[in-house]
Each structure stands twice: as structure tokens, then as C-alpha cells.
Image (cartoon, rainbow, N blue to C red):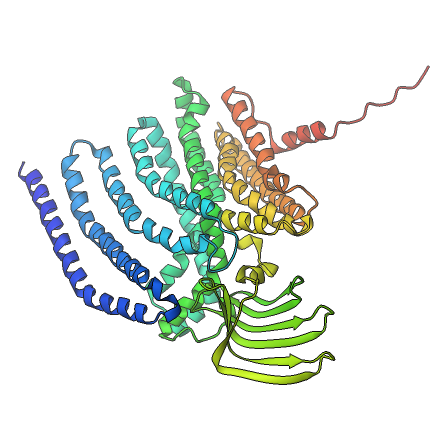
Amino acid sequence: MTKLASQSLYARVLAYLGVITTAILTWVALKPWSTKVNLAVDALPMSRSQEMPLVSEQMWFDFLIAHLGMLAAMLLPAWVVWVIWRHREKGRATLTWPLIWVALALCVTWIPSMIRNGLTEASGSEMGDEPWLAEFWIASSLMLLLILSVPFMAWLYGRARIVDRYVVRNFLGPFALAFGGFTAIWIISDMANNGSDFTEAKVSIAGIARYYGTQLPSLSLLMLPITLLLALLFALSKMSKANELVSLLSAGMSSTRVLMPLIVIGLYATFISFVFSFHWAPRADGAQRALKEEIIEQAQSKKKSKRSRDRFRAEDQAYINRVDNRQWYVGGFPEFYSRKNKIENVVVADFDEEDRLTKVIIADRIYWDYTQDLWIFYEGRVFEYDEEERMVSQTTFPQKHLEFDWRERPWDLITAGINPEHLGVPQLNAFIRSHTYYPEAKLAPFKTFLHHRIALPFGCLTAVLIGAPLGIVYSRRGILGGVASALGIFFAILFLTNLFMALGRSGSMPPFVAAWAANFLFGGIGAYLLWCRARNREVPSPKSLFGSLKRALFPAKPAATSAN
């Protein structure tokens, strides 16, 4: 009783310390933040004076959310100690409640800020692109469900049978080692390319962790299928060698029931991959180089006036407005386009109805003010031409800017050379909706990647369906054969996926078929192997399996009989 009472006392003391520490840190940060808010409001131009109250409210909202997150972090140790004391006789339930606390803290502190920051981009206002608010809310809801799913899976594990928990524990160890090993190899190889830049700039450990942490969604998409397959084969092979699977099957459990926890893990991995593939992983891929430059500049304490090619989303872009007879050349379109991060090195040529050059504008930077629907040009020159295309005047504007109410938008300038591989489902949908006048061949890569973003996560489930039946073996020779067969099928999946995607991007195959063909083909093979194992039938070898598939797709012609 004394020990239990001391645990309750420790929880209360930790809670008081957390509240007091948060209050002190909030009070210390209050005055500097107030100064920062006043400077941000004063920096707004008079044309945006109506936005001053909104900017102030948003910044104070960020301050409140950040310190609520700090309070949640400070109270977490007290919560853990209290849960251990409260559930002292329910050892399995102790993990669920701390995870619920962490998940709720993330939902309160991170999700509102993420939504508010993403709404501007999703509304299409600053870029002038097609709004994708519905897709943005879907992406935010998926991320919310992903955060809440972690304590749910912990609760599900605590409610599972002893056999199911044993199978899961045998799987999680190899999975953590495989995922950690592949991640370490990827980080080491990336550090070989970028490590010298980080070292020269003296980037902190926190900056490097931020850089690689933002790549976690795209890295998970790449690593999850192969790590699931390897961990599953290792766990089942180990249980087969110890005759544990034979004992479970002899006790009356079907092979499908034994594998059910692993199938649930495959479904959960598919859900995680779908959340990342929908929006966050492509976004991280597209912003990787720009984020690296931003972290290096922050470490060097330099302003954003430094120019770097790596920070551009697109370079050397050309755009032709045939309606208004105007041609654009953009030297660099920034990855994070905003009022502070403008389009750079721009040349605009105006033509008359007879395609004669009338005006050329060269500017160092331009920005489209969506609040006034105006293009603003900074620091450049204007050349005027007569009817014979001879220059008649030249005007410079080094200290002032020019404004034009043209119909072009930043989205029009960037989409000419945009890479669909770096777009998520919301951006791909918006691009296809706003470019219906494009020929089908030009839209084929975007439609193919749209379907691919949805089909890619199901590779995790396919890997489990293939690896699970091949991992249940009853001899050493069978173990080696099952591992070799599973790895061979997995690399066949990669080859055919890349082949079908190339055909889809070129327009030689319908986008839906190109994205889903490999999943349907090998998912069907995995379901067939699982059915064979559930019926205690011999699992066919890859050679006989592909032979049967070949005979089904390309039946042999019957031999011609000679007439008597």
C-alpha cells in the first residue's frame, strides 16, 4: 500500500511541476511574442490593412496552440505514472492510456495548425489554381484517423488472445530491425551526398532530424512492403522450425486463423501507406531539396535573399497565352511561393494581333496579389517596340514596381513543366479539372499517377498475402524454397509495376489498368496461395504457378488431325 500511495503522490507532484513549468515558460515567451505580432502587423502594406486583425488573431492562436502542446508534454510523465498506478492489476491496459493522451495532445496542438496553414493553399487563392478543399479535408481527416489509430491498435492488441499476441510479438521484432536497418542504410547513403553540405553549414542535430523526419512518409511508402515481407517470412520460418505452427494446426486452428493477426497488420500498414500516399509523401518528395536549403540557410543565419537553384520547384519555364498574345519566360519558380518568396527572373513579351512584338518586360521578381487580382513586377526594365519591331523606348524601374491586371495566374506558369510524381491526389485532381482542354496524351501521366497514388498502398496487403502462405513450411528445404519464392514474386511485382506505369504514362495503357494491374495480378496469386494453405493443399511453386498462368492466358492450339 505504501508503494501504491507513493506512486499516486509521484503522479500529483509531476503534474504540479508540469503546470508550473508551462506557466513560467509561457510567461517568459509572452512579451517577445507580443513584439513579434506587432512587427508582423506593422509590416503589412496599407492595401491589406483589413487583414491586420486576422493576422494578429492567427498569430496569437498559434501561440496558444503551441503552449497547449507544451502543457500536454509536461503532463505526460504524470499521466504515465497515474495510469500505471490506476491499472496496476491490468498490465496489458497500461500502454493504451498514455498513447491516447499523446494522440489527443497531437490532435489538439498539431491538427488545427496544419489545417489552418493548408487551407490557404487548398483554396487556390495565392496560386490562382483550381481549389481542392474537399480533397484537403479528406487528407486532414485521414491524418487525424492515423493519429487516433495508434492507441486503438494498442487497445486491440491488449484485447487479443494469447496466441495472437505471440504471433504479433514474433513479427514485430524482425519488422523493427528490418525497417530500422533499411532506414539507416537510406540515411547513410543520403548523408554521403548531403553530409558535406550540412557539415559546412554547421547544421544542428535538430535541423538534420527535421530534414530526415519530413522524408518519413515517402520512406515508409518505399520500405513498408519489403520489410513486411521479410519480417513475415522470418517470423513464420522461425515458428515453423520450432514446430510451433504444427502444434497450433494440430490443436484445431486453421492456417487462416493463425495468420489472421498478420493479415490485420497488413491491412493497417495499407492504411498507413494510403494516408501518406494521398498527400504527404508526394509533397515531401517535391519539397526535399527546398527544405534542405532552408535548413542550411537557417543554420547560417542568412536571409532568404540568397539564391539557390535547389530551392526552385521549376526552372526555365515557358508559357504562351494565345488569347492575349503574350509569352512568358520564368527563370525560377520557388518551391514555397508566397509574398516573401516571389517568382524570379521573368521575361514577358507582348504581341499584337498580327504577331508583331510590341513590348518586353524584364523583372527580377514578380508576385500575383490575389487580393487585388494584380501582377506586381519588381526591379526591371520595359522595352517598347514600333510596328516594325524596332525598339523605341526603354524604361527602368529599379526602386518602384509595375502593376498589370492580366488574366494569367502563377498556377498557369508552373503547370507547364510540373512533375506528376511530386503531386498528391488533391493536386492531381485539381490539375486534371483545370486542364480539360489538354490532349489526352498530355494528361495521361497525371491520370496514371492519380490512380497509382491510390493503388500503391495495397502493395503492403499483397506482400502479406504472398508471404504468409509461403512462410508456413514443415522442413528446412521448404523454408528456403518459400523465402526464395516470396522474394522472386516480390521483385516481379516491382518490375511489372514499373513497366505498367511506363506504359500508362506514355498513353499505351489505360491509367486505371496501368496502376492496378500488378496489384490485381499478384493479389489474386496471394489469395490463391492462401486458399491452398487453408485447404491443406500443396502450395504450387512459382514455376508451376507461372506455367498455369501462361496456359490460361495463351492456350495452346489443338493439333490438326490428318484426314484418313
